[in-house]
Length: 337
Image (cartoon, rainbow, N blue to C red):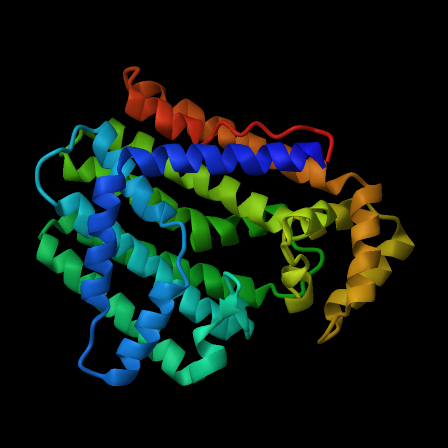
């Protein structure tokens, strides 16, 4: 259990370090989000206010603010406006995600779709995206408009690709990486690149921050998918197995399927061909995952992307801002889980 606790603490400490460095700006981001979510339609107001109360770490907004800071952007409020824009894109994708997955709980609270239904949730998600595009136009930078609009399209394509491969137990690792690169890493990459565009940085700086964000996003998604099969996380009170019950094939299952014997392969395939799976079946899968040391293998994969993200910052001179962004990648993953 010790290693999982260490990982959790590293993530939290590095996140808080970044948050504290831009806390004054983050307050303004929250105000901007709140103002942009207001509507003349009562139901939209009710749903968006509920969404705000569910919280969230605002990690993507923090990445935009942190990237802008390392690039020397100090004057004006464009970083605040675009950080809010990035967060609204993320919020919209979560609303759509919950409908697609029939999710009833997010962040420990009921989802919008479980309270107000799928139709309203989809439309409010669309409303958020419309607000995002409004903010991009207000900013007036065509490079940013092109980046964030293409990122929104990429996220949608990632969702469709995941649906296309749902329950596909023999999915290639390459396909999985394509899915999470589009669904998750693309917005991380956009969030950090926006920060460099704001300060009119040269191409190599923009590319370095984009590469940093992409690999950080891949790391976070792999870690998230892995934690969903880590039985030790019951220590944190986290419910595990959500992906299993939804029939999503993620990295732990892909790597497990590569390792098991012929009989176990057949059993796993049957499990993911079913419409529903139960807790007893989850426990059987968790036993296999532990037996074949899959959790460690997954974190080893994540470590590869951590190193890529960290190394991409070598283009910057040493500074407090660089140290903070680098620390976000520094939660080295131990081998004994």
